Structures are given as structure tokens and as C-alpha cells.
Image: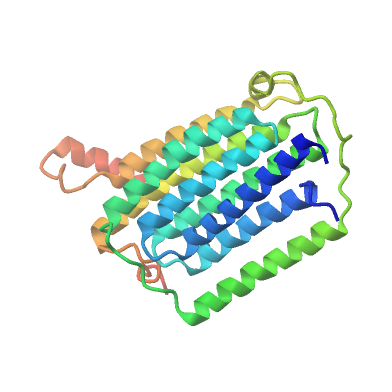
Length: 105
Length: 192
């Protein structure tokens, strides 16, 4: 197996970054930490679009357009999440996701 | 292996090492502000990867929007919701085990799937469009069968509604309580 980065190496990289983000989503207690882990997930998804565009659809650039859309959605998500955290912190004095359980039945 | 390929390989593995270590710091470090700095490192490395893949324009957008915008927003969120010296309580053992099992399970499943799939690769050196940014602009505003003008407009509406929604949610309700018009506007906002 050659060490020159091919499709498999790139996919390994983005999958490793995705699983690290998944671990963060499941273990972080601070809501801002969860948001950062979600950003890791979105970043690796955008990278996957570009990898497949580079290796499997070279003359076209549809994957790059999709990566742009992912970046825009990530920006919108970060804005809304930050507003929610500020509002929650104002009323509950914490952003620990294990403490925010008012909706729990 | 020619020199260009060698440089490409070395840069790839160097960036991969840095970004994986920084990503691990993002999810494990106790001080949430340091995690934000590590996230910025991961995103800068991501821009480096995009340059390696010949998408310079996307790399620029990544630096502008992610590193310049989203990381700054997250730093603001850190500063507004907790003191910078605050440390996070470690996750419980069972939660940690669950996270490790699910993420390693996902990683193993995905890697086995990649290993056993033969992807229809394009020819080794096909010609790239001469100006990627120009081509992306054509795609974004094209209304033919291969254009993205509808998603483009929907994204712009999404960003507008996110900004307005964020202002409504994060506004301090106590400040406007004496002002009647402000209060009715506030209740309108929370109803939507």
C-alpha cells in the first residue's frame, strides 16, 4: 500500500475527525463544547464533499458548491446556538447540558 | 516519487497529525476557551487541506467564515456564559465509555466500508476548470438543470432568519419592560 495520499487516506482523515467530533457531542457537558464538536462534524462533512469532488468528479465543481452551503449553514447554526446559550445562561445561570432538563417528563 | 508528490505527502501527513491532535484537544480539554483555540487550529488545518485538494477559493471562504466568524462567535459565547477560568466537570465513566464505543464503532464501520468499496474514480489528471471561483459563481446563480439558484436563495433566507431570531432570543427582556411598545414587539418575537 503506497503512502501517497489517495482517496482512502483522505477518507480516513475525515472519518477520524468525524468520530472525534461524535465523541465530543456525546461527552461534553458544557453546551458551548457541544457546539464546538458539532462544528467539527460539519467541517469533516464539508471536507468529504471536497474529497469526493476532487477524486471522483474532477471537471465539475458541484461538491465545492455543497461545501459552501455547509459553511453557510454552520454559520447560521452557530449564531442561533450562541443566542440560545446566552438566553439560557441568563435564566438558569448554567450551560451544563445535564442540568438543563426542564422539558424532561 | 517525484519531489512535488513528496512535498504533497509530507504536508498532508503533517497537517493531518496537527488537526487530529487539535481535534482531540477540542473534545477533551477542561478549559472551554482552550478548546475554542484548538478548534481554530483544526479549521486552519482544514483550509490547508482544501488548498492541497486544489480548492483555493473554498479554503479562503473557510478562513473568512469559519476562523474569522464562527470561532469568534464561539469565543463570545464562552465569555458570555462562563468565566474564562471556569473548568468543566469531567464526564462520568459510563458516558465516556458510551462515547468511545460509539465513535470507535462508527470509525471501524466506515473504514471497513471504504476498504471494501471500489469508488468510480475519475481519470488521474483531468483538467480542472481554469477559474474555480468563476465556475462556482456560475453554478450558484445558474437556473438551468445544473444551477443552484434556489438553494442559494434559501440559504440567504436562512441566514437572515437566523440573525433576526438570534437578536430576538438573546435580547434582554428586562431592559424593555418599562417601554410598552418594546414589550409588545418582544411578545410578537417570542410567538414566532
